[in-house]
Image 1 (cartoon, helix red, strand yellow):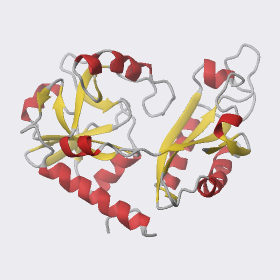
Image 2 (cartoon, one colour; image 1 turned 45 degrees about the vertical axis):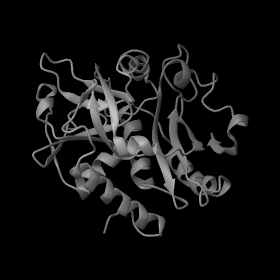
Image 3 (cartoon, one colour; image 1 turned 180 degrees about the vertical axis):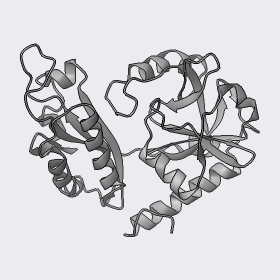
Length: 289
């Protein structure tokens, strides 16, 4: 694959991306990113993803310089170089570290921009038809509004609760005595009860994704606290992310949700997103119309 790193475009393995020379990013965790996929030779929600990483940089006190503009300029070149019109790819846009000052805890200049390109792999048809099985774990991320490359909790979950429940991924719960549903490892979550769609609010404890925003905009729903104690009352659950799209969830910690099948509301949301994607592939706006 062909990627972009600190002003250079070339084979990913030759660029030395995100390496040991980036002390702040690699050793200190001072690296933010956003992940998008292509469809029909274009990057979905490109403007929103660039705005997201720019806003995250401001939260983290990063000096951006021309980094956002450089990434934006690199994207069409990378689409062409990776033949994205013939096969979809995933692009991960990074701002990382920068020249480090004495002590190794601060940058003396602009953050370094990178765009890592990798193949796009759609959700397996079996999972899309039968739904995901999620295992739960108590965890609240720090700096929830910023997407860091630090995923230790998700990795731990996949080595523990996900294996124990023979699940597909993890759903994080709050530390409250009566836990609240928060988010997944790389996705947001919605629940359906009596036909009403709800999702945890963007209250500083979740990373509110771009696809989550699309679902709320196109399908509707309310942002409210979702109590884990009320899970027996849920009829459906679905997850969403920029790469996975919308996919049903049919089991939590081994227990079925509703009738254990992807429900009608979830299927409607999936169909709406599919319509928007088809319109985008045909050259139109990313919108269901």
